[in-house]
Length: 274
Ligand SMILES: NC(=O)c1ccc[n+]([C@@H]2O[C@H](COP(=O)([O-])OP(=O)(O)OC[C@H]3O[C@@H](n4cnc5c(N)ncnc54)[C@H](OP(=O)(O)O)[C@@H]3O)[C@@H](O)[C@H]2O)c1
Image (cartoon, rainbow, N blue to C red; front, side, top):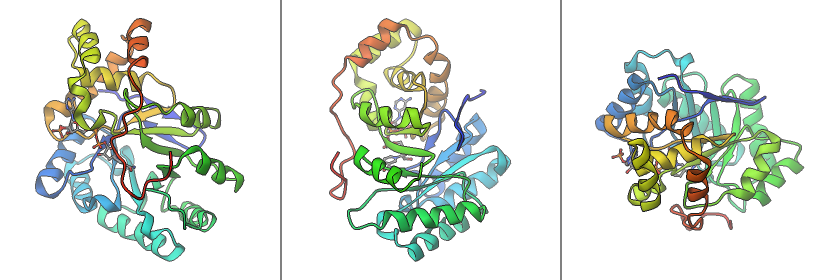
């Protein structure tokens, strides 16, 4: 399957990625390797997931050239001071067995962070060729504005986004600035598979509710969903949502748009005020 790309001045990123949160150990490694064999070329990991070694092993074992893979990792919020941040990046590179990341994200903001100092480190890493682009995750509009006030533009913003959670304000921020919005938990962590509206739409196309949920995201310009799927069945089903995206009618889209949009799945106690 040929996966389309989103292209901006700062990034060329496959429109669908594989999330790897909770893909760990030998089984997790096998899942990532399998995804690469199926045609995935975009893998999302993070220092916090504790699986970078497995992801690195999977990339090596897959036989897919490193240059053909878009690889993202993230630095945890406790490591945003310059030295820990830099060490975290070096550690990610070492575990992933690569000399560069395609995208490196601040995983979560913290009220205490020195944003300017952190961005300085990210830019230095980019200049040194250790990362191709930098971005942020879990930043509300207020923080995106702070980044802009520093004269900087992240290549991507990764936030929770799916058919039951609106990200209208962040999309409105990102689109004119050509910041890619990566949709994490795009299946609401599996919850959307039971959604009746999505299932009903899917019936027309021989597709599942989850596939319709992904297709709804895939048809949105500037949006890149990164569903986590561990089995061949679900990994392939999610790839098959790509052609489905072109088939959804205006009526289908309106029905999904009309679903309640207030259901946030990821709300740790250190999350910012949305
Ligand atoms: N930046 C952040 O703070 C942040 C936070 C959360 C997540 N993320 C990233 O986003 C990725 C995805 O989010 P997520 O893991 O929270 O949730 P998700 O992708 O919305 O949902 C994953 C769940 O959906 C199931 N699933 C996948 N494809 C399916 C399909 N076609 N039909 C039915 N079920 C399906 C998976 O089951 P199987 O595994 O059994 O296939 C798994 O239980 C993460 O893995 C991580 O890389 C980032």
